[in-house]
Amino acid sequence: MKKSMLVILLIAVSALGQTNEFILPEGSLTLAAARRIALEKNPGITRALKNIDASQAVLRQARSFWYPGVAANAGYNRMDVDMQPEWAPDMRYKDSFNDYSASIQASWLVFDGFARRANILASKHGVEQSEQLHTEAQRLLLDAVTAAYVQAQRSLEAMAIAAQDLLFNRMLEGDSQKRYAAGTIPEADLLNFSVRALRAETGFMQAERNHQIACTVLAQLMALPDAALPPDMRPARYAGMGEALLPEYETEMEYALKHRPDLLALKAGCRALQQQVRAKKGAYAPQVALVAGIDFSRQNDMAYEPGIDNHNSYVGVAASWDLFSGGRRPAQVREAAAQLAALEETYSETILHIQSGIRQALETARVAFETYRRNQQAHELTVRIRESVEKSYKAGAASLTRLNEAQTDLTRSAGAAALSRIEYLQALERLATETGRILE
Figure 1 (cartoon, rainbow, N blue to C red):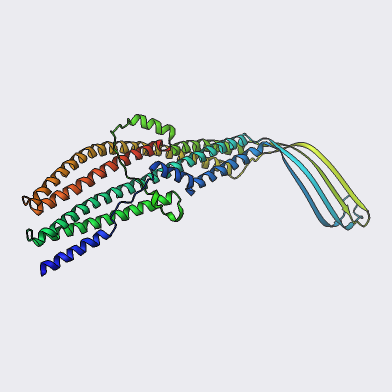
Figure 2 (figure 1 turned 90 degrees about the horizontal axis):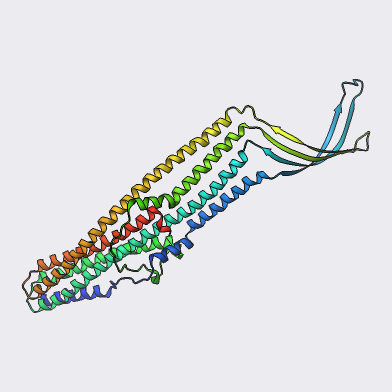
């Protein structure tokens, strides 16, 4: 009776496990497609484009100083006059009247110590810097998309391994139920496969959770509605592995120096600050401008006169020169020079970071590929071992412990081979990110 109840319970547990859909999600989303969608829809890229528009507007503002300016003025005043001229001490004039005035003046800055030209050049370099920062935003976005995509593939491989382990243990569990009912194996052998199947289910669900999180992050980077990937847009499983053809460090570093957008943005920023230093120094020189204008004024409602009209026009040259500013101008020059020096140090630091990143990626890729080759060979051997032990166990020539060891070795070797393969691919993508080739 006890044996019958145990068999019924195990059948129920097995059926419960089979009702859950421990199947791999199927998708056809490639890494290239994910990158393309992210570049088209991610708000960060749009924000970087707006920054380019802003820097172009700053350039237009700087160029506007090449042109003359025209200003119109108008005014009205109610005047109360109480006047006693010195040349006529016995005469005193008092009156109230309306005063109307209007004027138009044009001015054209001719010379300002070349500060205007320096500001225009600085703004041009600012536009270039904004464009490179837009490209840098693309590079970082592609790197993030790649990381999420690879993480999704990693968890997908873990799901596949757990599913295979589950299938194997469920198959042996069903076979053990028959053998236990026939009295050829002990109860412990029967329960062993049930426990291992449940552990495989747990591993599958944990990998499925990781896969779902990676897909959510990927959907967020792709700016999809509700940050959710549709079922048909799930990442596809990686289905191939070629030979390792790693480039030389010198080649990759040379490419990075010419194409890394953050490095190019820093160069443009340094050139912009160099021009800003020149523009600040231009404040030491005088400013000379051509001026011309027309003035009109009228006073009416006077006690002794019906009204007075004045018309004036003029053309001339105006010059101004700040001889002393309390140390403001040299402080502005030192500020711009210090910012330039700090940015140059950032440039040097970035080069060191790129050099380190390229070397790390190359070494990681090399070791990962060699590890993958060995793990793949070990996996093929463990498959043969597990199949041989399984046959021996069914024939009664091998113990349950030996079969468990063989299955555990198989699961571990499959996981190690998949992990090293993905690490190799991830290292290649990391290398492409470090050099800037990912933008190609």
